[in-house]
Image (cartoon, rainbow, N blue to C red; front, side, top):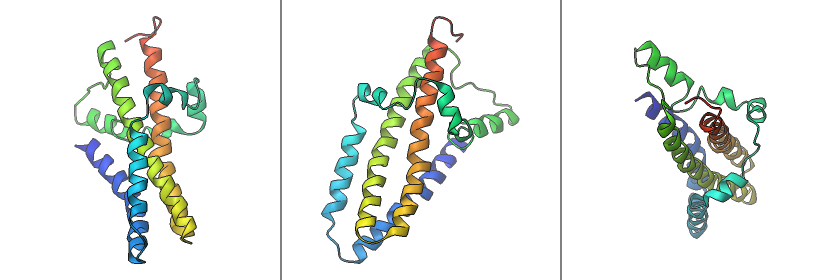
Length: 175
């Protein structure tokens, strides 16, 4: 339940900024086709091939991700450290990845989560550019900040998690 609350919290916060922009956009009697084009571009981004996703990785070194604060982000996400600690206090000591089979399944889950955030990244980015072009600089800035928090860091977190899981699955790893 806590996982879903965290998910809903971040989604509402981030999408409210984008929704605010599009609400103002339509209130000014602008054409709505642009929204549909942005949604279509986002759907295309969701269907990004797995091989391209791996090309988009920031680094092959987990330390790079740690230096830009990705480990801190692990506290604020679903299935993250906060949820783990709360579950421990409630006597629910369950591992997300208890064995190799679960690790492989989790790698597939990471791909879906990354695709979702790439899709949202495209939509937020296009919306920010649109806001700049319509003179809504403040909203563009808020959308850019939301994009970093809601999409960029989760994408980087998934890349970091993938590196950690692959290390566990390597012949020298212990899962």
